[in-house]
Image (cartoon, rainbow, N blue to C red; front, side, top):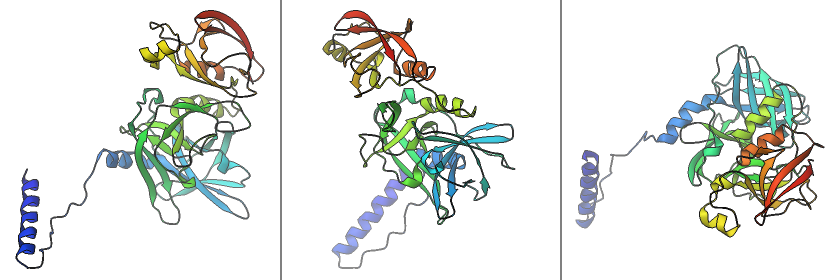
Amino acid sequence: MVWNLILSISLIQISNDGASGNSPAVNENTVNGFTTDVTEVISNTQGSVVTIVAKTEESERRSSGIIYGNEENAIYILTGSDILENTQTVAVRFDSGIELPATVVGRDKTAKVGLLRLEPPFDTLAIKLGDSGLISQGEYVIAMGGRRTDTESAMVTFGVAGTPGERQLNSSSTWTCDVIESDIIVTSNDIGGPLLNISGELLGMIVTTPMGGSPSMGYAISVNELRLIYAQLKEGRDVQRGALGTTVRSINTLRAYQKSARNIRLDMTTGVLITNILADSAAYGILKEGDVLDTIDGETIRDAFDLRTRLYAHKEGDTVQFGIIREGASASVSVVLQ
């Protein structure tokens, strides 16, 4: 109230000076150091965001990374896989400005995720993990990048997110990743950096624009899928998964009118609805848009992420049995995963 009164008196004084022909008074009551929830998130998280420096004999490239795991003396850093291709040395530049060499543990070209390992002689802060399955459309999100080595500045952007959806990140694979789209525009330096919620929890890792994506939007592979990828990369093996080649929506996210339009029972709360099938994918010619996947190998499919987790337990060439509901009738089909 006092602050509002001061501002009102200042504005009245300026108005009176102008009316009397005098020069307007200079208002010295400026606001500096105003903080928000975003300010606090940045302050608490910046130490978990690093800069990746990849060098060859001819060039040097930079992007961002996330301190994802901290185990005993070693830390594990997630970043984009593209920057790790055809490099001779890879270093991690911490927010403190210290730069250390890192070892490439693995790369997953399908999801565009890379994993680094190093043993810094100082304490580091691993990022807090969130749950991307809880994202609400229109939720505030924050994207961060590592500090640029030429300016020491760190890019931060703020916007809103849509609900996670399935998109191809690699045109050579029919696997569709769990991707969060937001109205945040990111640069190549931000690839590999975190997408955070307003509590400072990791929702996803920023990736390049996916197939069919818009260059005016920002994209991040969800933290829930990152968990599955990290678990395999950390063991030093290639990430295995069986691609179905579909995009789906969880039945439990559909509203009554959406179920009614699709001839889905209103009391149905498990399973997934197929919304699109990629050409030449495993599902092409076997499943149809509008089918509901009810079970996989005899077990109930709870939601879209449950299906994704089951597919990570398979590999290319595996045959799986799906229970489906098509136009109200139950059926069973076999699909050879790609």
